[in-house]
Image (cartoon, rainbow, N blue to C red):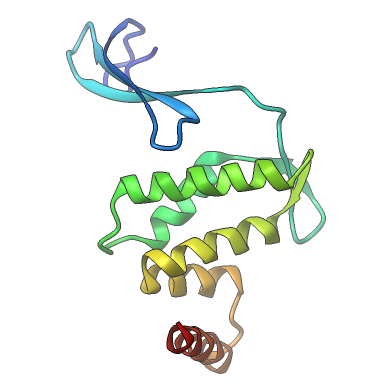
Length: 154
């Protein structure tokens, strides 16, 4: 495994354990050159999933893209990286369950919003503003009103 710090290709495994949802093995490694530690994950290889975008184009599902989008939404918010990883794992598992080979980007977006709403409302609004492409302040306010009324119904 290549070290992300120095690029050396030899490392040793310090610790191995299953993830919370038992879908992967988390390994702590130590580089044999620079002694820096890093984490890797080992997962079962699945059939590649194709995402159908809103404009009709297709691209391979990219877990990192999903993770980065959620991280941007949660920037400067009290959301831990573990919570984000848990959300990404849940979303990926849900997508694998509902999709055979292709999934709409809309389905992915709705899954992200569903989880962000429960974790952090500010992150939810940030994501929604990009995902729903609000045209003006009124459409943004409509989303906030919906969110507040949903909160009142709980």
